[in-house]
Length: 154
Image 1 (spheres, helix red, strand yellow):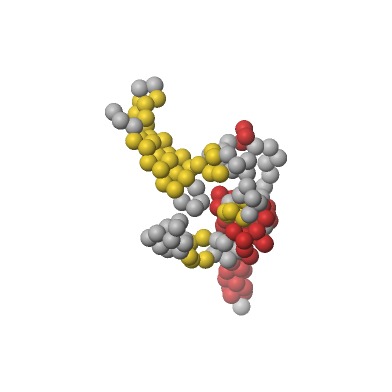
Image 2: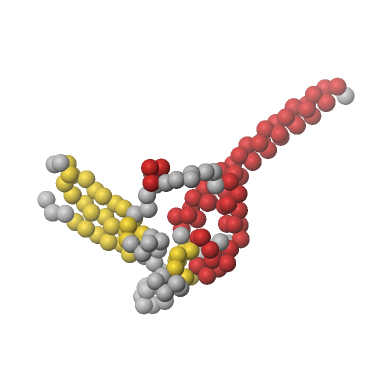
């Protein structure tokens, strides 16, 4: 059985899909995202706690997302000759809001947005809103019950 390797390159990352690899006689498909990390080396972003320290709640750190301005655009022809419509952020604008959300190239020029960080921050904002809605729903239920009780006394 042949191993098939396909690469998907975007401005954000390199995706690699290898099919029919054999590990201890078992066929499987590996699909991973490779990123150009802060150290300039190509690799994956690790998620396991064993690679991290000083782990704490994000808290209000994600509030900066509200200042970001999503845009639509097409890449210049040398990057995408087909002119595929894209959705994203402009790294220069993001750096003004939070410099930790961008990466620079070896010439220290702004290169890209750390979308994996933006995604985690979006999840944090969603969870904060979800908790707020749950609290508001509870308050509404309590107010409805109070109104019903007051109506009975009138």
